[in-house]
Image (tube, rainbow, N blue to C red; front, top):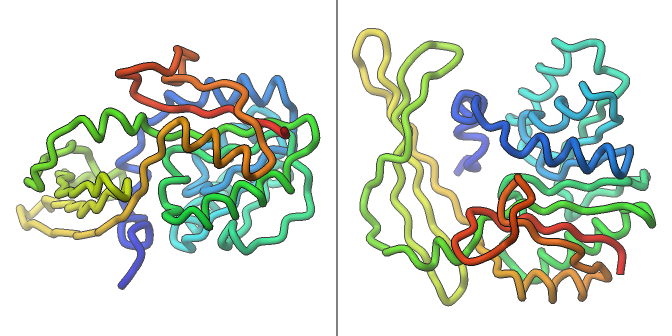
Length: 255
């Protein structure tokens, strides 16, 4: 079975065309920490190319080849960034990187794709090894409390509609999800219904498994990996992490 991001890579940029709310935070930390910067789970290059355009040297790691190909195509279309950007194709749990980074970003739910404690600690220990002594880490996650408080109905839900930037076709994005609260695992089936110009419907079905994290667990994982939690934000505006906050943005460093 094809992976989730391989299946939906052709729609990813259209679906996230308006996602910019995290960029100012990353820009602020880049200005504070300097470069080089590493993005783990760099996808189609949204954050990498933004920071490179601000003048930083940025590396991106992406396991899904289809997503990386889109990122590389964007870079090819921006030759002025060629000497600022390096993309690596591979699994962050198995890669060897020789650079020491002053800022490492694990953006937009990327950590949720690592499901086991062994994988969590393995990734965080690798991040520590890649981090310069004075460097910082940013991990962007949703507030798990909000998901756990919600009803678990397994019903079909219309999440959003958007327009495919390449074809102009309307896309209706729906989901069916089931949350295993004991294991902190969410099983989601994403359904993308595309309405073509001749009124035909094309359906893409893409299952995904993600894992939620709570703040005490993150503290313990960071400590076990030789890192320390520095700050936690509840959103990209530096607001406090508290009950009802939409995000859990973890800022960490060497212990």
